[in-house]
Length: 255
Image (cartoon, rainbow, N blue to C red; front, side, top):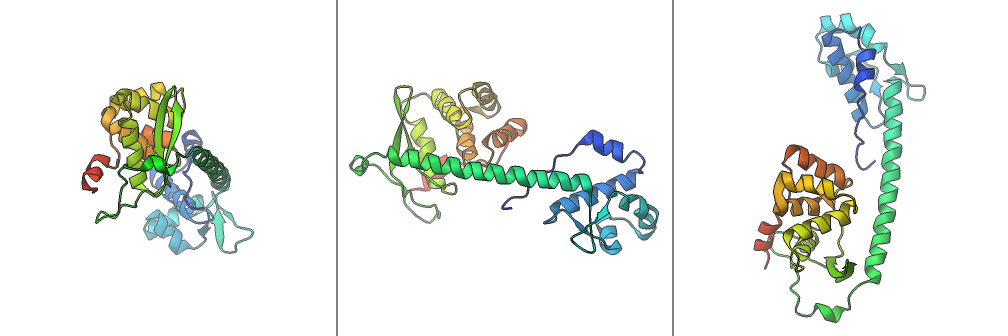
């Protein structure tokens, strides 16, 4: 997979399964689970030296805890010398399936959106006089796609076709929305609802309250490039901080 899936941690189940363990053994067991999750196939080599090192136990602690810890693990039938934890493996396979399904749906959606934008492309003559972003010492990619126009409740809504790694295009998208003759507040909610859906007003209001309109627009522009925009925005709301690209500073560096 291109990205490792997140681990669902079922707290009540974990506490129930480890109620008989000491505090040290509970921590060691958790380290084994996390190490297996990070492995390519959610398994661990059944080697005492490796397992003891993962658990960060000394020789005496390992001797006293080894049997109770290994009771949770099962030898792999198709991979000699390796062990797996049954519940963890089930979660791993389910996460892989969700990731694959989400990735396929995202590719289909992206392909469909590109086709729609291409069908609505403004003739190239309309671009005469427009200032296009260029490559310079900042290393930003140039805008290679023409403007497209879509209807937004009777108002034209301009954006650039872009790929997910093109900061310059995303910068232009942010500025186009902001400068399209509407207030910052209206542009913020319009952009956010196009990204998250028409019923996202309450969610966007939380983002506005957390970081303000100006930074909120930048968060939305960044979120549009994420696999899960809502989760990214939620993290910003919860932490009131994020690695948000400062498009205004980038704009100042452009010719």
